[in-house]
Image (cartoon, rainbow, N blue to C red; front, side):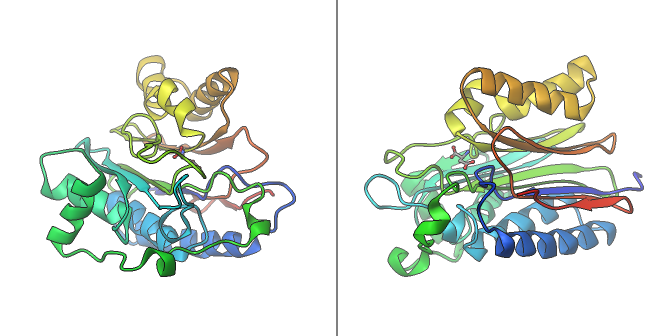
Length: 287
Ligand code: ASP
């Protein structure tokens, strides 16, 4: 049994240094504390990351769930993925329009189907079939953020990674994607190994311009460095972000390892995040 728990949350790497993110920071801080208490109280990492991401989706404070941005035709299409490091089981949804909680639906894909990824209409129909809460009127559901908030907020994907008392790791990511994206565009968040990954050694969630993270297989690259090169987690994350930057991409990565490391790194002006290391320190966004 591992004695310590680790938790990191992110709310997107699009934070601008000048932007007032007080409400989001307060939300992240309160949510992080609650999730940390769940972990120290014995909750499973998988349940904690699912719960954290579902709450961020429902808050409307991030570009995920309620806060999603419209695509180029004014519709909302959301992506999400979750992975259980112990079993390597994973569930994901892409381009969903009706699911109230894309991460909740991704979890059900993992638990209730033999598949990993459901997309579009099929995923929405699966949500209805399960009797999950769906969005009735999109225009009333989605929160239109004030124009001032749009600035510097291109990336507001949410993610959570955790290790629980038993040593199990899990990762979850959810997004409304990038503003003005083409209809049907799927980013890295929904793709296992690109924006989301968990195995027995590490759990990873990414945010940023998804196309770069997909081409880098970013989340899995972090895991590969841990497994094959036995690299410290911070170095592994830094190397992957450096490769993305060299390709012209920008974003951030959060990760926790079975060795007890917890990391939040970004190559944008800022990343909204919460990093808790039980009994050691708390860290809130620096923007
Ligand atoms: N990675 C997300 C996507 O490309 C966007 C983000 O992280 O803000 O869909």
